[in-house]
Image (cartoon, rainbow over all chains, first blue to last red; front, side, top):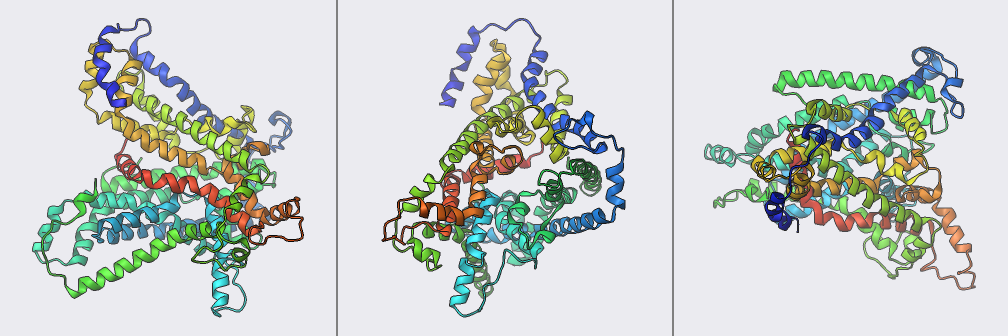
Amino acid sequence: MAKAKAEKVPQQAVRKKKEKGIPEKYRLFLIALPFLVLVFIFSYLPLYGWRYAFYDYKPPLKLSQCDYVGFKWFTMLFRNKGWVTQIVNVLKNTFAMSGLGILVSVLPVAFAIFLSEIKCKWAKNLIQTLTTLPNFISWVIVYSVAFSLFSTTGMVNSVLTDLGVISAPISFLDSPDHVWLKMCLWGVWKGVGWSSIMYLAAISSCDQELYEAARVDGAGRFRLMWHITLPQLLPTYFVLLMLSVANILSNGMEQYYVFANAFNKDKIQVLDYYVYTISMGGGNTYSLGVAIGILKSIVSVTLLFIVNKISKKVRGESIV
Amino acid sequence: MAKERLVVPAKKKKTRPGDVVFNICNYTFFILFTIMCAFPFYYLIINTISNNDLSNRGLINLIPQGIHFKNYVEVFKIDGFLRSFWISVARTVLGTICTVFASALLGFVFSQQKMWARKFWYRFMVITMYFSAGLIPMYIIILNLKLTNTFWVYIIPAIVQPFNVILVKTFIESLPASLQEAAEIDGAGVLQVFFKIVLPLVTPSLATIAIFAAVGQWNSFQDTMLYITDKSLYSLQYRVYTYINQANSIAMAIKNSGTSNSALINLATQQTPTSIRMSVTVVTVLPILFIYPMFQKHFVKGMMIGAVKG
């Protein structure tokens, strides 16, 4: 339908006279303006909210009715014993989760390389479709799935009990053990198929002559994978690696929020989740939350600059 | 499109034993992983259509037994579920339309060299991908705009997504410029060029954006959690989250709600916490399970376009 329209255009366009009035360059700008206003409101205006970090903000009150406290919250983060222990613990979790995330970021690369070794087309398509699926499921549903399978009454426990492998159900979800690893594995389950798509695309655009040439020279399958496929994926991997380094402090909160419970709370609380907990999630220390947010943004932007510099050095091309 | 090239030119080479072993291992790994990805969904579905008593006792693992669909009927009777379902449908439809339209229009405008201060405004938008003011400042803005506890909080903040705009802009720039020039010589104005020439041509990238936006809207959970306290505006995902945590009490409520007061309680269709939990999950996942395979090609295409830097 759309194509038919496009073909009719010339005749119609001839009849239309050029609109008068505002010059075209401003007209283009005016078209974009409403959207730019939205960008301003929802991305720039919140920055003005950073001033809340310098007050003792207590929500029903207006900011003007609250005390100005200067850098109290920032110094408290580094001086107050109670807060410091909490923050250290939270940072430990954050770095552990992000670190594991970075470690497993090689998995999609391997996944793509080995998947491309499967020559049966329909099998490959089927695998790709089914392994990408979890990426499109929200964390809430992942949690529900996890609950059905791994809760103390879930499938895994009941099957293991029936088989006589275990006598008492294992609490996979509500225990403080291996929380980091479990969260990481859920991330892998959800993301590996999807992340590999980009690498698969890169593999499919590889020059086939390279493979031919190498094969003529007597290279086996593994050598092709190692010396030809892998090097072609490294640039993409590098960019994604750098970006995940820059995002090391922001692992989001949805996953951790849905999986959190009284047992694993200490191990699962990452920075984003923590900010929520101490402010809107009942803690009511809004100003401290803003202060942490500010520090986090500063660190993230700095990291991004550094990473960009590294990228320029290594690849001669910037990421941002 | 990519797949054709992957097939190595059909050169008859002898399969060596090493290759056979490799293939067996490779296939085994992928089959196992694929089962790991797909089985949980299969497990949920067979359990929701099976005899609830058996399912509750954990006896349904591979094959459904005592098939019935009463769980789904009951699920929609749970207080607020249908309402949330429609809220999610509405936000998905409206949110997707808005994002797609905004991305197309902005992508087009930013592809026009003539635009006033184009570079500046483009950077003004793109830069927002790399910083965020944080949770609370955003909340305060939403609060001051009186968007909390309104449906619009789902739509308005998500309209402009810089990444999507880049996607469209890149795509438009790859189109031959002569098309637009010809239309302009014929006297077409800016909006005419957009609606009649550019819009029909960028539909592939708009399809990609639409799918991502729709999945994002459908799956969105955090915005309800942060900005909505009015239960009638809960999105499905948030509702499901609360149900999962309250499955026991819901099952009790249904049990006590009259229909099963008779001496003979039909255990096979009696709602249990498990059946409720699984049924709401399946209802939430099903739209994606259906739509997803149809659009898988677009994802791949979209990723490839997205891989080109804007």
